[in-house]
Amino acid sequence: MTDLEGLRAVVTGGASGIGLATARTLAERGAAVAVLDLDPAGVPEPLLALTADVGDDASVRAAVDAAAERLGGIDILVNNAGIGAAGTVEDNDDEQWHRVLDVNVVGMVRTTRAALPHLRRSTHAAVVNTCSIAATAGLPQRALYSASKGAVLSLTLAMAADHVREGIRVNCVNPGTADTPWVSRLLDAAEDPRAERAALEGRQPLGRLVTAEEVAAAIAYLAGPAAASVTGTALAVDGGMQGLRLRPAAHS
Ligand SMILES: NC(=O)c1ccc[n+]([C@@H]2O[C@H](COP(=O)([O-])OP(=O)(O)OC[C@H]3O[C@@H](n4cnc5c(N)ncnc54)[C@H](O)[C@@H]3O)[C@@H](O)[C@H]2O)c1
Image (cartoon, rainbow, N blue to C red):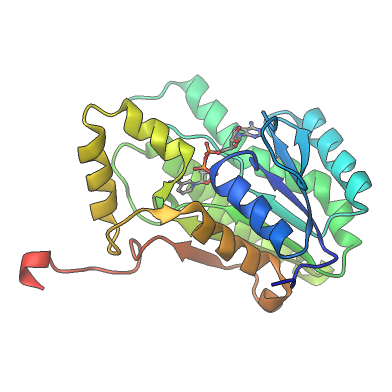
């Protein structure tokens, strides 16, 4: 597919997992792509690798402007960088709350704010935020992370309303548990990684983890011209986790 030919894209957190798969997919479909990441060292050609911390406004502005200059503008912004947190409301201190909300929510604000002047000059402007099943389903031990992704969902809708008349579409994807280095780290840290993986797989009606490429395909759809009438939407890529209520296998 070459539906993104001529478009210029910026992907935050694009050096790993969902972000890297997205950057690759956008490039395969014809876009010129810049990756903004804390550590973009391993980002392959033809992706443009730029160091940026979405937690730091000056760093974001410099990287977004550098991307716009090198690519000749910005049509697509994928706000994907994010960090995790485990625990109930009793388990994370104030500093962790501020840190995760700062990266996961304010990080998207910083990148979008910096990209808006460039997006306004585009005739195909789209923003896609990486949200999560944690925004729409109550998951155990994810109070802080879920609060951050709930904010991302609401922010997506508000941004979509604010910028629709400027011709800028804003949507998000809600992945279920995806097979990325992030989840590998979680499994490695579990007491019984195999049992933990089976529990995560079993939680999704399709019976397996989502792949980064499947999430990337959804992001590329929302970013591209095929989604020209789609704004203010959350697209679940979660193996049925949000929408389906199955009976136990023995009783189905
Ligand atoms: N993996 C999952 O199961 C899952 C499910 C739902 C949503 N998500 C969301 O998908 C996104 C990507 O997750 P992933 O699983 O691909 O993770 P990952 O850890 O594999 O990749 C995240 C990338 O973001 C970068 N990053 C982290 N903090 C940053 C910062 N301050 N500035 C710039 N870059 C930063 C990291 O360096 C890394 O390259 C996150 O927003 C996450 O919340 C993941």
